[in-house]
Length: 282
Length: 256
Image 1 (tube, each protein chain N blue to C red):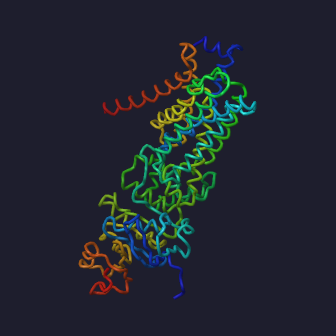
Image 2 (cartoon, each protein chain N blue to C red):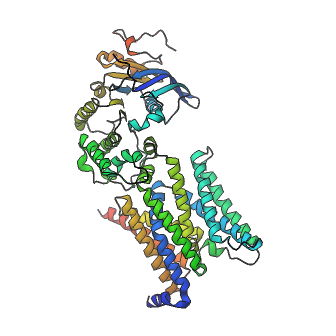
Image 3 (cartoon, rainbow over the protein chains, first blue to last red):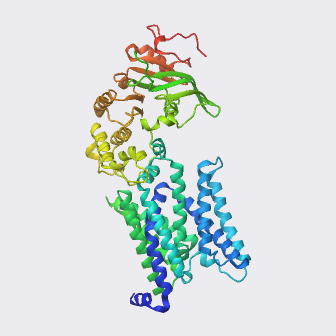
């Protein structure tokens, strides 16, 4: 543990510090938006958005190398793809008469396949694993700045729309009857979800990012009687998972993304098993 | 008598889900401060009629006017209590949060004002549930929840109150108290209530609409066992306005 704190201040281990900052910055966004997503039961949609992000990352990497566009960073590609996927998925789930889950499943897979194909065709070797499962070695100072800006946008909009978002999540029909444009709020929530996903792609990767959405919020829901409490607890649990996971992964020489997610999952399972036992003993 | 805009006016309204006709050629008009009960068999179209009045459904033919305008335009003046809440029991909200949702249309992106909170508390006080305000919504009994949902509808400060089965989960002991509250409300707002319990509603409303594909109207003063039997066991009939009702029952000349 002590070596971990030493490592955090070691100038040669700046990536570890960046990863911790990124995780702590992202935790409130995950806590707030994750609570809405869990309460609205949109986890599946969030998963689809997360996997589409790979398409954007792949396309950005490819264009960057092929057409020499240095500004077209994977982060930018991820943001564009995430927002695009969120709007597409949102409009389909609101408008389509197709089976929505089949369509979402198709988008999920196609987005990911696009990314893998682009990455394979990009000149030079790029390891898709680092995008799928996260790689804290790749976090740059600029990424951190982008994360901070996105964070402010997500938290700001998430809190501003608090009362109406709750009304829409709780009883959409009633909210619509009160003159709230519920479709707009659904799309807003999906876009905020998309941006939140981008925040943590670097640290835990697109496959596992969904865990940080649902696990802290689902754990928190067992201790909360109000939405804001759930958001607060989810944020704290997210911070503990990131800080604890990074420290464990450093100490035990484990990949950091999976360790963070394992810790978040451990909290969740402990709570539901504990609750189950308590109910049995009663 | 001065010409008054009716609270609800339906003209030759027909609605079907796909091939299945739910309501056929329904016409009626409800004056302001009228108290009306919708009764009829399950699947007869009572809830559909409410949703048409709310503008959640659009009729295939015919027109519906609410307070002289389209249902969508009038929505802000309607308070609605749904029969089933598509409600997630693990959703962590307090009773106050739920009632405040009646005010959600007016807050924009901001927060609820002190005025919003006052209106919400007053609505709860009217239903004698203001003591429940800080409680978690999912800790309430079915009957308490029902009242909270009526309070939420009242918090909209409606001119028309649409209640879908308000007594469905209410204990018999509480029902009488409930009935007094609804009767009180009927003095201030136009009340449309769907109910299975004809005995219950007939005391508080002035007219009973029998909804079974079509709508037949009975003034409560003329309700007899015979008519009630006819309402539930009857065939599909043309729409009759209440002036067509007599001691002999309906004219059946227009049976389809």
